[in-house]
Length: 267
Image 1 (cartoon, one colour):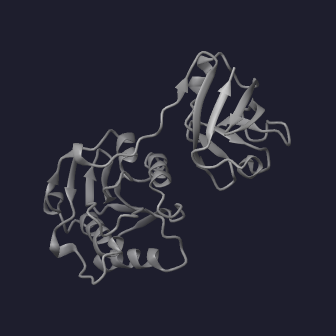
Image 2 (image 1 turned 45 degrees about the vertical axis):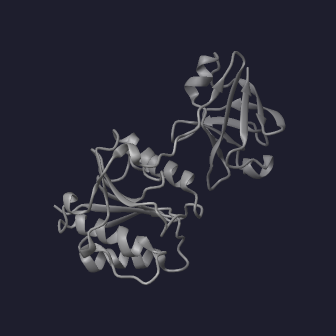
């Protein structure tokens, strides 16, 4: 049975890179289905890419993940395939894949993408998504290539890792940071609702919130619409983390917060 390829990248949709990669897949097997996750990952942002894949992997069909956020393309970083209980994940060895792997039970095996029969000859060394990643993904998904034929098996301990930063919890404070700013300007943090509950906080409570040097109050709300209009709120978002939001507005612009902004919630 042929496997579905789910594809994510930081390519955008303007220059044709996504179409070229999907064209390579179709030339190898025109019957393969490609599920586009996103091609709007901020350029070269491995952190955003890894968080996106961690969230998406729970909801996309099992099969093959083709993920490309690759600022080190052409350098010594390896093109790899990682096997998991979910399926096979293909991309660069730069930490992009490890959170998704962990979400579905961890990596089982890893292989370098070395089989010369499935590498497209190329002059430059800047488009591995076209020349290496997509041919291997398509060949495996279509049943033309077995995992053991990819290349050298790699030591899992040698793979690059991206780790979500931990919170710092004291008697009266929870210190974290902004992990991700979404399309609407909501700022997801690395703070969990369980950490708020451990401080005896509940939905409806108002907390002291510090974002970088700015101090304000925020209400823990059940939905994006249950906050005071014009007032900043906290909500458990669809990924189960605490997000900072502004009802019908853009809290990122209001507070000028950004990826890695420091966040402190005080009881």
